[in-house]
Image (cartoon, rainbow, N blue to C red; front, side):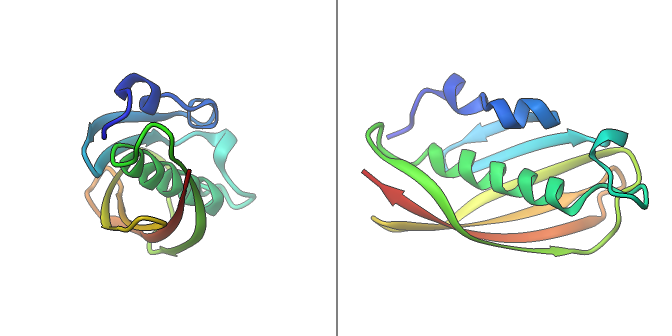
Length: 130
């Protein structure tokens, strides 16, 4: 069922904000994102939308390893708890698929900073379509 790994590692939006694929396995992905001033909000911390985008990308990539080539996926719900403001360094996101049915899937994401502090926790639900 695993799709072309090179294709899964590439995404124009992920490339644009600087997301890198570190590890990609069946139902699991590890991504990295370096802090950048261009991704901050007015108070100088990483914008929450960037953190959600990192989590969304992580679940999408992890789930993409589990779908058939003729299936497509789309997020239908994402909930993110922001725990620590990010003012620099590198973020690491690890996503795993915790449920995959025929029409929906659920993934969870933990995002850590350089000091291995949990900075965000996300649960995302995706639709699976033919």
